[in-house]
Amino acid sequence: MPPEQNVMFQHFYYSSGPIAMLAIAGNVGNAVVNIAADADFQANYMTITVVQAGLVVLNWSGTIVINDSAVGRTFGNIAGAVDGFRGNGQLPYPFNPPRMFKSNTSVTITTVNSVAAVATTVEVIFHGNKIIPM
Image 1 (spheres, rainbow, N blue to C red):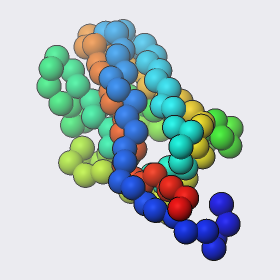
Image 2 (image 1 turned 120 degrees about the horizontal axis):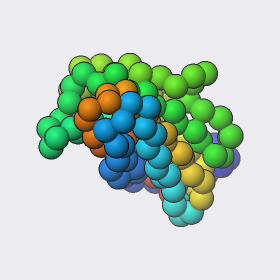
Image 3 (image 1 turned 90 degrees about the vertical axis):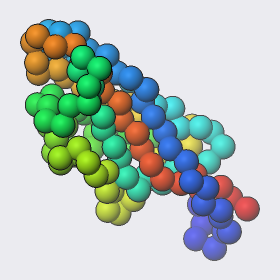
């Protein structure tokens, strides 16, 4: 988009929905977040919620890989610890600079359960703005 073009920023979020993993160490969960065709999306923050037995878990040793299909790249060089993105689980993870997702693309999220005895659900939400040309 040319820099001289007028745009409107509209608050929006994209969610993975629940990514369920069985109570098996190494069990993998996947989700695809489809960025709508109507506008590019600027992600300012990411939140990750982990739930086990109906309770939010603040310290979870599972891992996550996020892949942006528009550029064909992952967010990092290896699977990262979920807690590396969410710290103590109380604050969102800021993207600095904001992460841009092109319209009509997909973001694939892969999580791996590290706990053998507990089924786990993870939800990833990208918080930011749709960038709507005016």
